[in-house]
Length: 225
Image 1: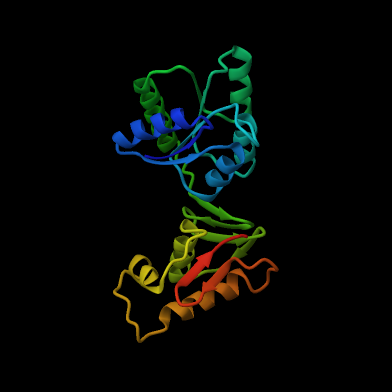
Image 2: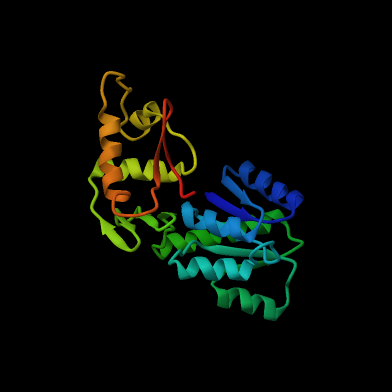
């Protein structure tokens, strides 16, 4: 499972992350609600573990916000706030399950497995990547910017997916050739640059905010800042 943990207590976040990784899970950690929201909307996760009392944006607002963005990733609220009213607020906000602190790690894993199984049975997958007003639906193979559909070839789609999954990080031509084209990079060809330019014309040309950037001598980066 690929899991996002949104928890502002470093010790608890570290404990949960270590335990999940020992169960062969891939874990990302966000330490405030705003960061958690952004990561949830930018990356595909199998499940999100979400605290309620968070800096910047509380957990109820986070789950409500991502549901408004049509993100259906299963959310487990993990919090010390265990009253019936708190649970009802969590469920009404869009959470799928609620586990009260303190908890046993075995119960956490059982809840996570149940959530991902239920999600799989319902055919719900959080497979939409988002950066700024650009989104990529990995199930339907559709790209949109500012709600406008953008037609991409299979290679362009693969290239954009790779750039979005590595948002904010420079990727070299070698990286792109091996991860997107599945070939060894030929330094004598400019095929990577050509496809990046194709993609740039479709993604950036008609929009004031440019997302695809060239880092001279190093490669390319997709970022929204």
